[in-house]
Length: 255
Image (tube, rainbow, N blue to C red):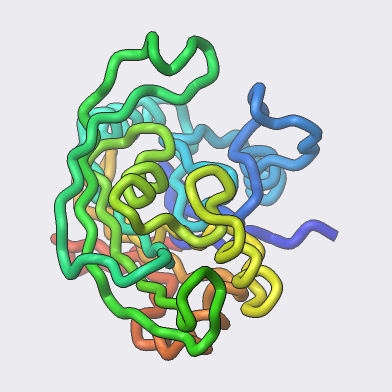
């Protein structure tokens, strides 16, 4: 039986949900043999059509917003395109990341339609901050111990795989990233720490409601494997919770 999606916020114009890791948002050429998609699951759960306002990579979990009518979808899409949406992610990376840094490496598009060398480099900006770190007395690579960090990630632009590519280029690949990470660390987390997935989660978002105009702030809890990992590594104090609130109005959020 298909498990119901967690609804973070719902009103007559939009709905925000927790997208599970590994679930594609909708059918695409990247779908392969996938038979289940977030858009269809949400449509069936709500009993009405929904319109995605942005994208979230298949292996990434966390908050995602859908409009409930085309006009709202257009307004939300414009807000994302014009960088009027603040997004917050948590990532578990290899190594002791910097306390705070702004990454501004330009990125070429990765859409598979043309060789990357033919794609123009586009501005890409990501702000990162180390929230915590741990050193495990286990040899995973060539060193006798293994160090990992919990990073807060704030993407200022929305290039494809931007967070994964920026952190890898800076030298702190996300655990579970098969393309940009390192296999032995990915296997260690999968086999010994119960996390066989990309450890990147979209945990927060705030934006101007496209109809009311009030600033809506959303927070999304981590899934079970990431929550257990944070508790095991001593990072429980950084666990987000599900919530929705208006930042500029005292009224309660409709659910």
